[in-house]
Image (cartoon, rainbow, N blue to C red):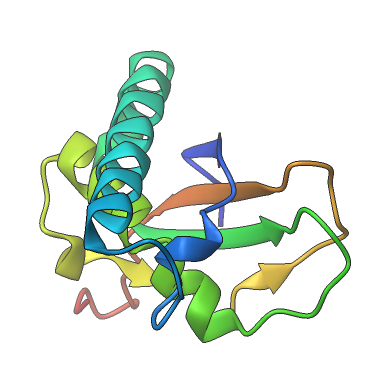
Length: 130
């Protein structure tokens, strides 16, 4: 299936992982707001070049971690919750409308880290049912 659009997003803060230790809810709220706003802006920019991606409902996520440490895919996805919310806001849908391909793909480490999201149209079977 062809991608409608593929965008690069910043690696999520380790403080956005569930049960992360940090300086408190103020910092977590600030990081959550920043991740959501960054994703909203990046997705809106991408939609200007690929307006057909506004209909995307399948997300394929590739993680390029900032180092070679092993990571738990459920925690990394949870840390991306604000990013996914920003994407949903840009597409003007509820994030429950997304089908996120599982398991996400982990690729080689990359300085600073990167999250690549591939947008694909909603899968429909031959019978027309979703």
